[in-house]
Amino acid sequence: MATRLFITYRLNLSILMFFMLALTSCTERIDIELDSTYTRCVIYGEFTTDTLSHSVSITRTSDYFKNEKASPVSGAIVTIGDGENSYNLTEDLENPGNYYTNSDVYGVVGKVYTLFVDGVDLLDNGNLRSYKASSEIKPVTPPDSIKVIYQRPWNAWLINIYAQDPLESEDFYKFLVYQNGELHSDSLHKIQVIDDVLFNGNYTNGISIYFVDADSENTFNTGDTIMVEFCGLTQDYYNYMIELQSSAGTSIPFFGGPPANPRTNLSNGAIGFFAAYSVAKTSTVIKTDL
Image 1 (cartoon, rainbow, N blue to C red):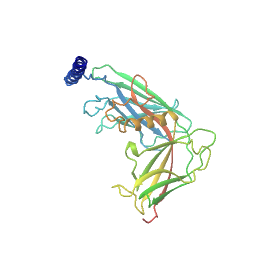
Image 2 (image 1 turned 45 degrees about the horizontal axis):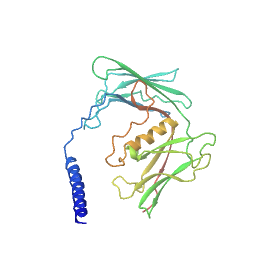
Image 3 (image 1 turned 60 degrees about the vertical axis):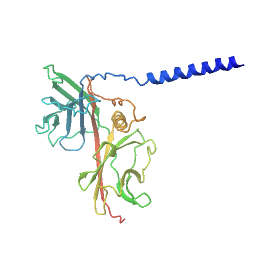
């Protein structure tokens, strides 16, 4: 009996020592080399039915693990065309990498517009590259009206829209909100994009599309003029915006790896997007008292 207890004790002690050694070995420092990725061209541009100076930005990627600002691509040749008309964009020399059309340019619903970017010296080695992307302008139904309502239980302002959604097609929307002429939805997480799955072919009758905390620094106030731009998107651009907002959000798990790049419609390995879309506007003055 004593011999059996002694053997059991020796066995348990051996197992304990094994695990202690294993745990000790886990404290060894391991250096992991995080290689730099290759440089890619980043292009983002919009072309709408609104008459204004449309813009295209061109930059280079920077390493995910380095806190570096993306460098602009200057000196590119940038044009937008529909097969009949072609619009040249001029670089803003005070803001390199940003290119603009003349202010009297606008798109037409149903046409496909192609962005051409030529003469890009991506690596500053004299090797010039070219990129292009195409996007169709989809129609958007002008809204009847909007209402800005204060909800006391939530201590928040809501923007509700009233519009007839077309029955014959699946539609995708982006909403841009202006307060007294200044863009209020001025960051990625404030831009609202939705599809018409829940109201396809129906009258929206006051669906909420924007939420503003009444205690926030840039809240709405009685007497403000609120304007909403209704933008009719392609499905591809809608999906790009969803993916972009998702990748810019908090990583789950918190220490997860770098997010994957959103889709792109650009050629030759560039990332970003060229979006053509229609715009309709409506506005109201807030008359609700808190």
